[in-house]
Length: 203
Length: 428
Image 1 (tube, rainbow over the protein chains, first blue to last red):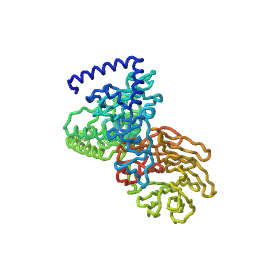
Image 2: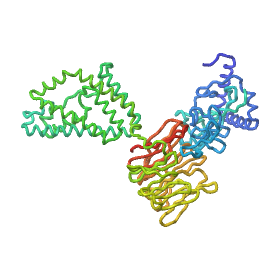
Image 3: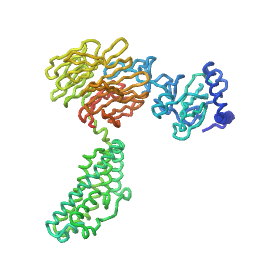
Image 4: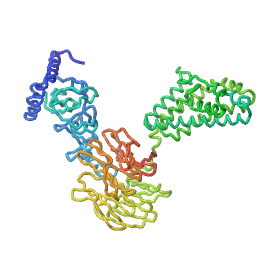
């Protein structure tokens, strides 16, 4: 339920503005590229100043106030990723493989104590695949081979900055099954699904 | 109907017997056909969903028979066309009457059991057993004709006496349907077909009806009537009279009945797959793994594949070799025909973890793991659709190595938390 605070009204106004921006292809694509470059260079500090301190509200994940569904992931609908688009655990943010198991740097499944998991034969389990949600999962689950991470936006969630990321495709249907929106995609692509990256930067 | 099969109507006792015989045969055939069709459709729908639906329907039907709910039954309120016996020859109308009543859907349904039986046939998901079960319905239809005749006196009076006990019949039917519902809910078809073959065991292998597997305590068991145990052994592979397994020195091949060694492969080798005199196994190298095929009689070896990822337990049968490779960004099941060298990808995925294939001369099975789900998949070697033999929706359990016999699949089911493994079996 939305809180009737001036900040919330301002937030809604910002959303409407961003929607208008999204409809304008040239401006949106420029903003999308600029935003990505800025975050990459400044580590998010420039973005933090532009984000309200109050928590953002979303439909199925915090910060996502639009309707496009989450990208397929090991813990649907929580399509949390690291900065390279690989899955991480939605609660802890630690790397996970495609089976949803915590993994170490070499990709071996580990338990909560950090020890490598063993199989019924007593040997260490071989690493399972760990692939990108946007490029690899949507390709296999939905048959799309043109998906790219493009535009993004930032919201404050749980006291830290969350980057919501559009997974964009030339498909005119989004993961929900209905017509896709342009969102923050550019070059003719539209939003197929969304995912998110928690930066850990306080807000 | 009862007054139709009389000597007066049929023309003579001989013709009456012929009419009854034709009626009976066609009633049974029609019912069996209906059962077979339902069983066929059930195979497409999926056993687990159909069983739960049948259980729910049985419960509802029991409530209806007990008078707790009022539900109209789907039925055709028709009798057999009387004009047939005037217009058609006896063989035709007797057969037609039998087929119409045997099919069940073209006539009155005094109780709801027929529809529960239909749901049960769907849940059975096997045409032949469903046909056999439904043929009993047709026989029951025919029995009413025979029973009424044998009671003596007027057949109609006999039926009226039966109808007078309808209340008792409905109550008994309600109890029977409730019991059916309980059984259906307790034993989903997919689970009822599963049987644990061995506890605290893994790595099943099957040949000619014999099964061998490894115990988690470090021994290999071959199970004919009196099990034979090899200690200090693991990852067995059975082929006829021969057994290959891994021990401390490498791979050993023996005649399992006598224990006499017939071959030895030393070194960092493991995971044998035996199809005498050929054996495939994994060899560890410097950061790589090799799948090697050796002819134990001729003494020749060749390297089939070299991988830097995970190379799993191969399966060797009828001149074909199957194996799995898991890399950081994909996994796949591969099959090579040894005579031609032709290699193909049976399944691959960038998401799932595909592993542990097993072969028989006609089919290949493997394990497909995804987040929160594990499935045992089965497909014909020549192609076609892939189906799921078993699955678990859980993060706490998974499947491991597999073996395929003739019409029977074995696989290891294990717990990620305790690492305890059991071998289960199911028919397909």
